Every structure is written in structure tokens, then in C-alpha cells.
Length: 173
Picture 1 (cartoon, one colour):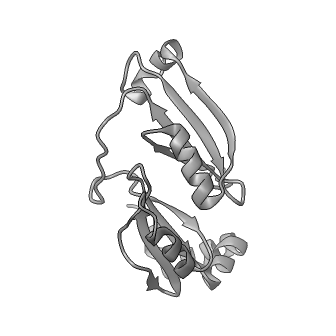
Picture 2 (cartoon, rainbow, N blue to C red; picture 1 turned 90 degrees about the vertical axis):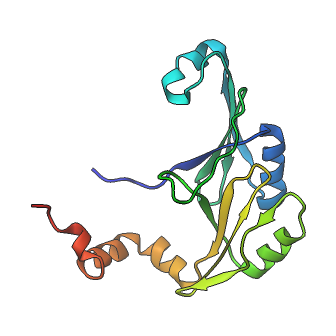
């Protein structure tokens, strides 16, 4: 059995409608699905959401390449808590071209918190910011590495598994 690809990432937001508008304005990601669960359906998911007698609205925002960002708004709001050292998801990354233009575009917005200027690691340019919901997003320009990762995924994975990262694939005793 093999995984075909990453399907989507889910984020919880304060205001679904405002978030949909923001992601369209900034990234041109269209809504392709809008739905929700009312109290009766929501209560069937109590073990998943750790809430009872609430409701949730959600939307799928389509990214180039067919992946989506699933955006949730719950009727019960919790305080945003983010810690890099806590196990769990820390951020999601959007693959872009021309980091400098993206940085300049977001730097002038009042609804964005830039967390670091553009960096360069192994030829990849990237920076982090928070969207209006406090969600941590990385924009990255993979440059030539995009071709390697996107077009030669299986070969690169096989090569790294046999060479540089082979110790991770040794059988446990």
C-alpha cells in the first residue's frame, strides 16, 4: 500500500467568512466546498472535537495542484495556543515563486504578523508569518529543488533512503 499524496491541511479560524475573503484576496484560493454540522450531527463527533452541543462550519479552499486548505469555524471559541516544542502541527507551507515580492506584499498589511525576513537554506528561500487568525504560515520558493521534489519524487525518496538517510530505514532488533 502507498500514499498517493498529501490531500489537505485543516486550520481552525475565528471567522470563516472573513478568512475565506482573506485567503482569496492574498492568495487567490477559491472556495470549492462550504458545509457544516449542526448540534445533532456535531454531538456525534464529540470524541473528535472534544465539545458538545456546538456547531461547526467549514470550507475547502483550492490550492494550485489540487490540494486544499480546510478551514473550520466552531461555535465555541478557544484561546489560540501555539508552541513549536509541543508535539503536533506547527505550521503549513505554501510553495511560491519570488519570495521578495511576497514578503513586500505581506509586510504592508495590517492583518499579518511577519515573524522573520526572507531566509535562504540550501538554495530555498522562505519566511514565516501569521495570518489574521494567528495561523503560522511559511512561504517557500524551492527554486531548483521544486523540480527534484515535484517531478522526481519517487527517485529522490529512493535515493535518500539508500544513501544519506539510510540509518532511518534499518530494521529494529
